[in-house]
Image (cartoon, rainbow, N blue to C red):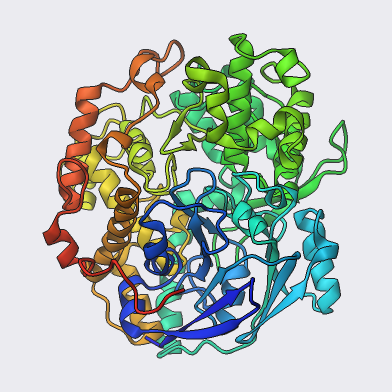
Length: 626
């Protein structure tokens, strides 16, 4: 394993410094999300202000970015403006590979510039450039202007739009035409620092210990993946293929979870209808699955809209969540969020909350300024504009969960959130493992921290036992063994984020996809470092436990590992999941199993023996002060 390099940028003083990252830290955390958590722990493990100039934001590519691999993903991490707790967002595209090729393993940014700036990163050099003329431009315009200024077509850029500039609490960071570090408000942190963008160009070689052996091992893994039905489906339809499954099984979020199936209306949002707009499929750097559409809308009110995507999460958030069955408008609303730099999931959640408040007459035309009825495409689009610019009623929603107190107890209970982060495009009352995963996710309501999608495809229990190492029910409606499933996937996903591997190419919806046994061999061939599968599982566990310690330091405990009251108190009223609800007693039994497997006590606090085993007992301070 090569020694890594951290570059620290103080936007207030303009000072740029380089700090080596030890082999020990790289071995224990690898890169990406793991390295970010190790660097940020001293800042995140106590309450703080996400907009404090001293509060850092860290961006780190996964360890395997920049070489032929299973994706090319990186993480942006900071204190979340949306939740006030752990902020972390994973992004694909080519930015991570470019940063790795620049010779930098991690970039940590502190301070606040007095004027808008962007960072120009090229082959271990970092410069601060004026960005005054870029301020108020959208994320696509910003990327075009920076490339024009630098006179380089191949620069990869992570940037914010107007939403980040205006410190909308759920603003994200964009790169390319579609890729977003969306959740938890990392774009708002950049906006508070007046950091418009990070532009990267890397041309340095990334040496492999055994290039021939690595490529042979990689090609074998690659070929195996391409035989899997899940990867074939991704290459044909992209993640929107999940829309039909969610609708048919009754765990699609409809009208702020008042329903869980969109019925015939939902069929208009199914993946095959994207063929009408799609011009081809593209992928992130070094990824064998071309899972996202490149599209254009040629006719109707949204004619002229072009872009990439949208993902299942965006179609659900701009479609069924809002009672909107028009695919063209869902695509347009998603692209509008992308241009402004808004997280589509949170944006849809807060608009859905407002629509239910309007439905229940808690707010009215006087409050909003116009009707806010389910499925009203014009109202949805108008409100997106207002949120991004903090205008009118949008200025209230731009504060996310922190706006809920305005509407009192009756209003706030309809904002469905976990640890101050709103729930997403599914309803978890039917698939019990999904429910536990949402309740325990370290960044708040999140399907990407652990979601055991294998739970809903009907695998035999013998296969599940062999995979998970214990008894697991084959029924997604059952609670038995689901704590084990969540624990298993949580560690695997943390490992994937540290490696830069796309979780869709690991054990997501295919039990035969790569996992630590395959990663172990790839790492040895690439870097000459021996990690046993057990070592890699421990790295995933270490990251999860460190994040748990962040939450504990901020005063969260077992009571916060829960679900919105609607999940416990309101059985699903209709559709294929009719009658399903979360039983509190059985939910707590799942939670106990999950804590036990992690080595945490009954309150969800990591035991001292667990901290020592993972090398975390002394990690209340770091070797250098970022």
